[in-house]
Length: 114
Length: 110
Image (cartoon, rainbow over all chains, first blue to last red; front, top):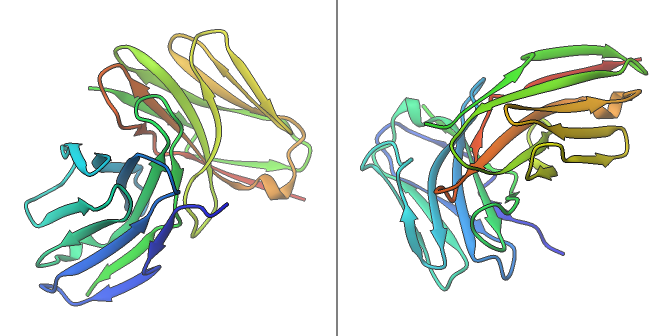
């Protein structure tokens, strides 16, 4: 079956511009996660959705970052007024149930802020 | 705060040369320990979940084991196609997220 799909696969933007990253999870997966992976760094948790609500937003690095999920499916991560330190690969993952279930990852969006 | 440390950072093996990767963790209330494989330009690919000390899982040339403080990923007679970064992650009692280590970059040469 189809896996987690992310778009775009690559995004180059100028400092100060806003960007939107999209994630289509595996059908039927209720839990959705956003992570960030910088060069040489581990995966950094950003936000977790259960259905359309986000009970854990603790990893969002600043108020320039926001995310939403609609219809219990597609999610969008928005970064406003991008900075060079936002350059990273943004990974989305989904899971059929929260807590203790393996996450299934997409191939990420590589964001480069110039 | 949950901590996951992986070693070594990088490992170079010759084809057929078995070895082990280590993942040590400091957490409160482990609900599961996960191993993933990540190829360049791709997202992490799930390999194993281990839930309790003493548990072992195997898949082809890979075997994962778990103790109360660490997990090992044993690679037996590796092939060049096993070259990848191997990531370890933990899920703990009150968290819904996984906390990842920084990975071991494995290169297997002919």
